[in-house]
Amino acid sequence: MKYPKVRVDLKKLEHNVKELVDLCGKNGIKVAGVTKVFCGNPEIAKAYIRGGISYLADSRIENLIKLKDFKLPKILLRLPMISEVENVVKYADISLNSELDTMIALAKEANKRGKLHKVILMIDLGDLREGYFNEKDIYKAVEEILELKTIELIGIGTNLTCYGGVIPSEDNLGRLVNITRTIEERYNIDLQIISGGNSSSLHLLLNDKKIEDINMLRLGESLVLGFETAYGNRIQNTYDDAFQLSVEVIEIKEKPSLPVGEIGKDAFGKVPNFIDKGIRKRIICAIGKQDIELDGIIPVDEGITILGGSSDHIILDGTDSKINYKIGDKLKFKLTYSGILRVMTSEYVKKDIT
Ligand SMILES: *Cc1c(COP(=O)(O)O)cnc(C)c1O
Image (cartoon, rainbow, N blue to C red; front, top):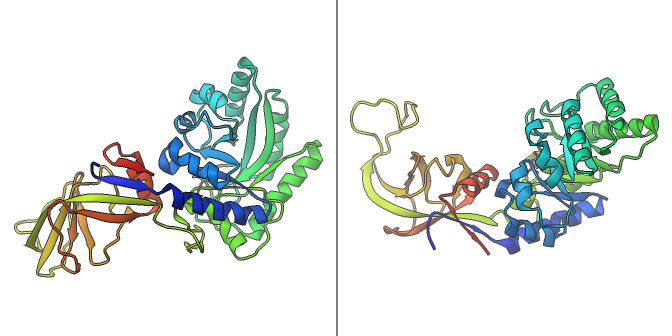
C-alpha cells in the first residue's frame, strides 16, 4: 500500500449511521446522508445505505452523478447553478432552492425531459446563508412556484450553524413548522417534508427536546465523526476514527527550535513566529498543505505536536513521544470534518476503503 493513505473503516461508519438513524427514527425523522465529505464515493455511500439512511444528499452534482445507480432519492444540497440545470434535473430527484429564476430554469429543463423536479424551499431563520428571509417573500415565492407545472414543491427546509453560527432551537425550528402550516392552509397544498437542518439540530434530540413535525435532517459530520455540531459534544456509542490518515516519516533530526539567520516570509508569504525550546527531535512526513490543513489532523500519538508545514511536508515535534520512530515508519492521525474533506479530495492521498 502506498502513502499517504486514508483508511476508511466501513463497519465503524455503518455503526455510526445506524445509531443516528435510530435516534432520528424514534423522533419521526428520516436521515438524508450527506456524502460531500467523501466526494460521493459509492463504496462509502453503501455503508450509509446499509446503516439505514432514507436519502442520499450532496452539495455537488458531480458527486450525485457518481451515486446515480443507487435507488434512494438524491438531494442536491447547494442551490443549483442555472448553468448546471440539465444535470440537476437528470441526476437529482430533489434540490434545495431559494431563487425563482433558478426554479424557472429547472422547470424548463424538466419540461424538456418530460420529468417532474422536486423542490425544497429554503428559509433563512437567521444564520444568513441561503434561503428566503422575509415571510412575505416566502409566500410570494410559493405562489410563483405553484405556477410551474414541472416543479413540485415537496417541502420547506432550513440550514443553521453554517455561516452565522446560529444554534437550532425549539423557537427557530418552531417558526419553520409554523411557516409550513401557513403555506399548507393558504394554498391548500400538502408539504411532505420539513427539513430541519444538519448535524447541529441533533443536540435537541439528544437532550429529549421535541422538534415536533420536523421530519428530515441532513446529516454529514455526525455520521462520519459522531459529533453533534451545535456544541461540539460527542454522541455516545459512536466512533470518531472511521477515517484515519497514515503518513510516512522521511526525516528525523535533532535541530534547534529557532531558525538560523534573518527571518523573512515562509512558503505561504507569512512571517513566522517561533518559541525557543532548545534542541528538539523534529520529524518530517510526506504530506503537505496541498492535501491537508494543519489543524485538520490530530496525531494519535499524544507525544507528537505539529510544528508547521509547507505544500508537501509537515514538520512534527517528536521529542516528547515515547516511541522511537525510524525513517519509513507510518504516523497515524485522526481527522476533523474539514480534515476528512481535504484528504478525500486530494488525489495524492490513497484511499483504503475496507
Ligand atoms: C453540508 C450540508 C449539510 C450537512 O451538514 P453537517 O453539519 O455535516 O451535518 C446539510 N445541509 C446542507 C445544505 C449542507 O450543505
